[in-house]
Length: 176
Image (tube, rainbow, N blue to C red):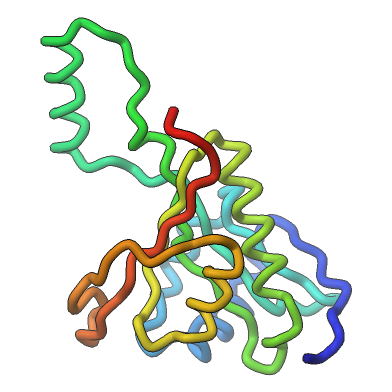
């Protein structure tokens, strides 16, 4: 394993987007469109790892937004039960994207980014974190397992090219 670098992690900015897109396109067979990533600029959960002046990786995390039907079901339940309970779905974090430049991998940078992203989600009050990963992406699966994620289920044909994904999850703390 190559020596670790002095990577600094900070919030993504407009000036980072070109390099983030280069990393995105070299890392994924179905990269996210630039406009989608641009929409997350300014969010606290969009972090880049910088080595010197060069962006070498990024992570995008946030709290999962429950579906309309899930929110409607919760409201109906609360109406009839007359209880004020916290919806655990509102406190589930999601790792939406994580990538490190191809020539900078195997140096612990992905671990640093994931640790920062999980810390942010913990600060938001997430009790659980989920992510989807291609079933063939053994290096990513190994990284996530190192952090305590486990495979919960297979999602058939999850990706636009028809590839399957695993839903992996990590419990940060007990149910709210």
